[in-house]
Structures are given as C-alpha cells and as structure tokens.
Length: 94
Image (cartoon, rainbow, N blue to C red; front, side, top):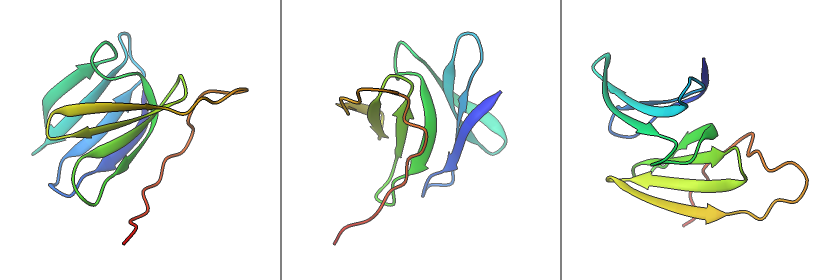
C-alpha cells in the first residue's frame, strides 16, 4: 500500500510503500530505479518535493528526513504525544 507519494523537480516519482519490509522507491519512466529500505531511510508517512531538488519525508517516529543527491539528512522533531509526521509541506523562504 502506498502511504505517501510526490514528484520531484527532476520528474522522479517517490512513493513510500507500507510493505514488509517498508520501503521508499524512486520511479522514473514507469520503472523502479531505486529502493530504500527503512534501514537506509527511516520509515515514512508523508512526502513532499523540495523545489531546490530532492524530497522531504515525515517519519513514523517523529523525524524529518531530507533526501537529496543520494545524501540522507535526519532532523529529530522531539514530538511528545503522537510522533508520526502525518503531513509535510515545503515552503520556499527567500
């Protein structure tokens, strides 16, 4: 089951799959190009494209993850009650 999906500025489709094992996939030209297991990228729930390139992922354990040019950066949110990041949106600041 797909729980999150977005398209980045390069035309890649990113989908967070609630399969076993859970994984994030990058799709290009209707073919899966890459798969990231939750051991590589934390299990997510929401995705949004970054207008500067790459994507942001809201995770099941309360983190925000940036994935750009093969680099993964993880930012803890320190959420107390319900740690699932249910929605992510990117706002460009100038």
